[in-house]
Image (cartoon, rainbow, N blue to C red; front, top):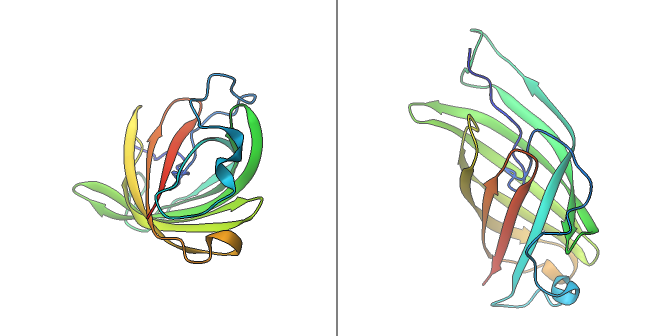
Length: 162
């Protein structure tokens, strides 16, 4: 039976993996002040670690249209916790296995909202791209996209603000 694993989030979708671990010193990320500007052309790299996640299965058993993955992650940059996210992903296709994901990143100076189709996580790594659809605070006019990779213990994400 196939089941789908958390996304998170990024990503997340988007942005979750299936196991939690401590903050990651190896996380490849820009200088800590990259969360500040929210301006055009900014790139923000984050690592998501699942805090809570659950699956809601609909009939029939196994991967089915309408199955959902719901959860949240802690977000890290350079090994330092910088925020959190919440996500809901719903299976919308079985060929290919795909889900519609809605994600909100909660950062110190505002929130960033994301949306898009992402593959069901059946193995690692799994790559995905989501649209940045808006935000609050310094991200109130946010647009662009997020690229992410689900790994066994984390989700690596890069926000491309345009």
